[in-house]
Image (cartoon, rainbow, N blue to C red):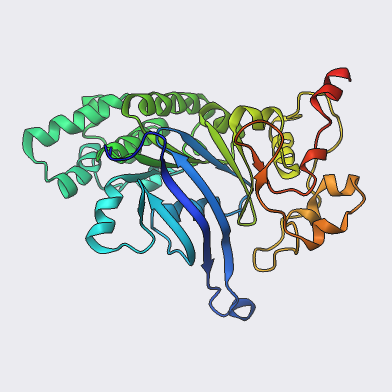
Length: 345
């Protein structure tokens, strides 16, 4: 880890990031704006989670941070250095410091290679390790993730799902990265194994000072691991908050809908109204005017369709829910009654 970075400075900085895909003749060749002006920071050593429905732009944003997807406009910085336009050897050096653990462990591991080869490959390529030094480092990595020498000769199809994900994690940690992107790291695993992998990831974070960017549909996973949460909808960040306050008192109607659909009533005041999005998520080719969530917003329905929701896109601004909380909603202050009213009820 760099010794030049201030302890208070962010490891990752994203400013007004836009990522567009061309549609190759479909819909008149119009670009799809998968990420539409996102600004966020991730502090060194924290777990930042991105949540939202499929198509919200979470994975595209993560892949862009890894420089696997080109930036259309905006800026990315890692450890204080602009990385939007670097290439060649500079990009190769950067990728030693950023790694990813994918959703499907079996699919991310070459089925022709033994575990020893899979974990050794990045060490051979980047650190030129050979012989006893290489074997010692591979065994050290396997021990870190809860595997043993007996797993060295096995191939991915001979491993359980949990064991395969442990190998994928060991491989990701081989070059001692600072940032690890966790792309749905437990969704392909049995429920009985998921908790083991989550605990392992938490232990590795503490042991190695890792920073995680977590992509997940599973809000239970997010609550278990995350320090802060960014909620995405149609390419925009609509809420950002420390994890526990967000789960207790969401600041955007979309966040509340996600929480209620996943874990029931997310609030703490016994409010029994329906908070279900209306209809289906719109196409990113033709996002709604104004607030992108307004055609599906249950809160707007309750407020009798205020015109501002359809005409003006709300900015992501601080809300009166405590420190470091932001939401992009014209009526965030009306999402819940005041805490005094909730206590009285």
